[in-house]
Length: 372
Ligand code: G3I
Image (cartoon, rainbow, N blue to C red; front, side, top):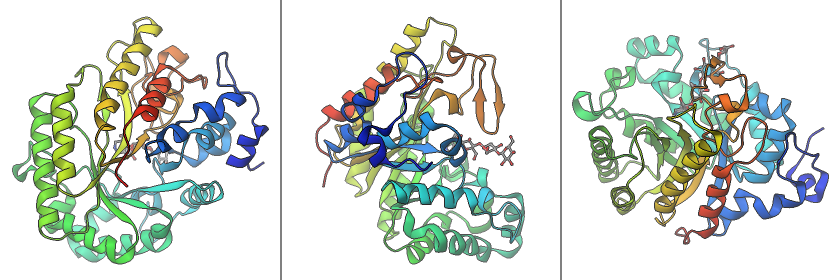
């Protein structure tokens, strides 16, 4: 059965598994998307089509809480063209259809990311140059360009340990630092209505590396804008980490203001919280995760240029972050008990909303307006 948002809000939702789960009648009151809309913002989550198809509670949570979705894996180059010339569109088509049926916005993630570039393309690029990248853009944006309001054109370009501050990748090697502007222009030509983004992590905490990363990002954005590249959005992943915290509000606020002054919108694209004390009592763990989420959002949502918040998944069950005594399976950390998971997403592994959910909801609902 295909469940739509309308069915859900009309009360067609089945009871969710696990004690303390959200009740259907609470859904409209507690929806994260409704809370975000109060300040003209969007709330969303990263998803995989196989989870949407197999897990009804997940589908219901997405339909209730999300105004947008980001394909966690299936718009990446290695998912779309694992072997040269053999395109696999099934999972991405499923996601775009799901988004279309349910009036959800889609974030296109990500055209260029070294880690998700298939091996054949890494070597072909070195031999054949830009046409290899251009072919991928044409195919991907030709099919999905208009379906996504925003595209992460380059993911994770910054590395302050590398000379020049850019990650040493096959793209940098083949095309030099101009590859970022070139990619933005190419994407703009193929998807002229889309807002284009660079997306990166590690700008949150007051350690030397993250301070240097902020400076490098500001430098990169400022030079791209100066040279007229079509860059509209900067995606801040916000993979928070309790071993580095707590966050310091003032420098974070200053950084966001500097970014906004460069004339870009800011999206929080991959929010989650990596725990540091996985063996502590569960209440203390959940309280620490919620407090860090609140601290981050209070600063971020005070900045009018921040227009959306996306969490990297909705439930701990699907988190990519290490589980206690767990193992990795298909890009997810699998634990044997709900407590065993990293508890850095809004719902636990049995679909019960946690204090992080309340932190998101309250911060989103209470924040000043985003700029129109
Ligand atoms: O595709 C193979 C599949 O054929 C095989 O059956 C399966 C068996 O393990 O592995 C599959 O690939 C995995 C893929 O997820 C799909 O399940 C990869 O090994 C695994 O590395 C991949 O991980 C994803 C990773 O990006 C790389 O695409 C994570 O789930 C996803 O959370 C992560 O997301 C990134 C963002 O895109 C960028 N920012 C950091 C974030 C976390 O790393």
